[in-house]
Length: 99
Image (tube, helix red, strand yellow):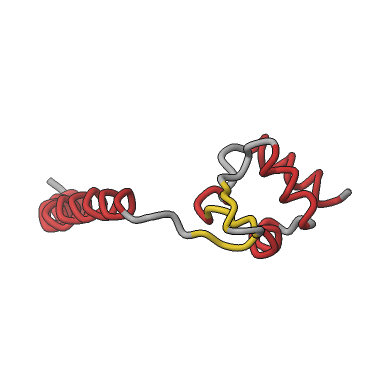
C-alpha cells in the first residue's frame, strides 16, 4: 500500500462519522423547515428579488408560478416560491425581465 492510499484510507475513516452526523443534521433541518409557516413578502419585494417589474410578478401570480395570498388589499408572496425550479423557468424569467 502506498503512502497516498494509506493516508486516503485514514482520512475516509476519520471523516465518515462527521459525514453521518452532517446527513442527520440535514434531515433534521429539512423537517424543521417543513414545519415552519411560509415566509410571506410583499409583491414589490418579490418582484425586486426576481429582478422583474411588479406587473410581471403579478402576472406570475396569476399564472400560479408564485405562491401568494391576499392580506387585506395587499398581495403577499411565499418567499420559497421565488427560486426558479429549472432552466426553462430561469429563461422565461429572464425574457420577461428584458421586456
